[in-house]
Length: 153
Image (cartoon, rainbow, N blue to C red; front, side, top):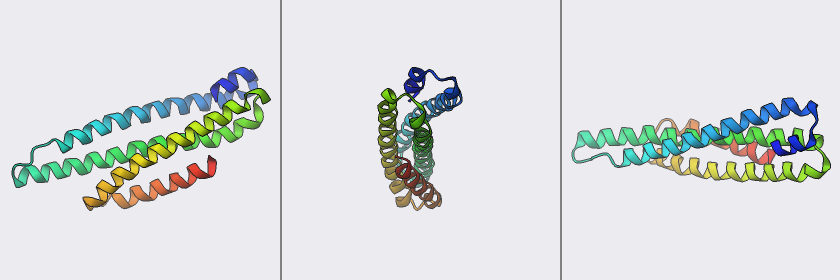
């Protein structure tokens, strides 16, 4: 989408380009956080569980890591939903020859958001199995973001 702005070369699109740049940074940060949170989740599953104390500590660590591993893909979906919505503002303002680039960007953002939602779903299932009190609120957020994504896709 930023390429479409650059090719259009219209100074009136500078504000939109700035918003797209900010979204690009948010998306990259959310992806990095998702990777780090997944590594923490794997580490929690590797904790020892030889006695009841270790089992409690491991279970608490898995729950905390599962919450983080749910929040990071949801942050990614939120940024992608923002990008999807912005693509609708951008589409009528770029040169006709690069509208397809905006549409392709929209398709990529929508597909990436759906993939991140799948990741969140797996972690929400884990939180449900752990009877985590955080599961309900995270599921509500997930459902809201899924609706927002589909409306903007």
